[in-house]
Amino acid sequence: MDQKKLLFLYNTHAGQGQAALHLAAIQEALTRSGWLVTARPTLDRGDAAVAAAELGPAYDRLICCGGDGTLHEVVQGLMPLQTRPVVGYIPAGSTNDFAKNLRLPRGFAEMAATAAVGVPRPIDIGRFNERYFVYVAAFGAFTDVAYATPQPFKNLCGRLAYLLEGLVRLPSLKSYPLTVEHDGGKLEGEFLYGMVSNTDSVGGFRGLAGRDVALDDGLFEVVLVRQPKKWGDLRRILATLLQQGKEPSELVLTFRTSRLEVACGEELSWTLDGEFGGAPERVTIENCKQAITIVHGS
Image (cartoon, rainbow, N blue to C red; front, side, top):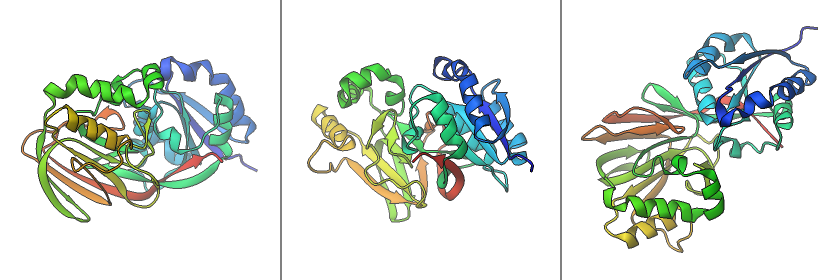
């Protein structure tokens, strides 16, 4: 009987070379799970998307090893395909936000075994104009804070790390005049930060998008933050985002939607899964419900 075929894409540069250090153990675990494995390193930025698009249709499963950026690229390559292989993810980056949703075990050999024989479940994917994102599209003042703050500092200081970075930036925070249309209606105002997400963790912090996040319900969790006027406003905003405040702040709007249209009177820079996503003046974001099947742990 023919073995089922598995394509293993790995980023040797992710997480200071963690994938390369554990490559032998990963490939052994995949092979022991009964797959006929083809291993291919990613060569340059964007190469994982090209490999997924060109090679993916010939395989029953595609497992990628790297950071969230590697997974992001794989999804870019797979989404235009009519038939997409099941995806396995072995996180080897510095933050690995999306992996926190998948209940993966510790250890590279153990994660590889889970990616090979774990539970395939469909997840929603976001469409951002003509591009895609796995778990978050964001703009504005704090877009890069979680990614720029060193993980050891976040581990040591927790939510305080976010607050301290926000305090440093308060004098230079810029707001944007936005018109936002969503499933529940239309709103306008000056906003300094926005996040459209489908994840329990952003930038190493849990709970920013709220509780009870479902990856397959066809809905995004949206957070929009109005311009603070003083330090106390910023403190209240961060307390609300990090779920420390007893009452929600009127400066932070949260809702769920399957579609979002954002219009700004100027170029607005976005990040998609932590990568630069361009600076369009108008954006249409759509939820592609259960578009990718990805392997979860127990």
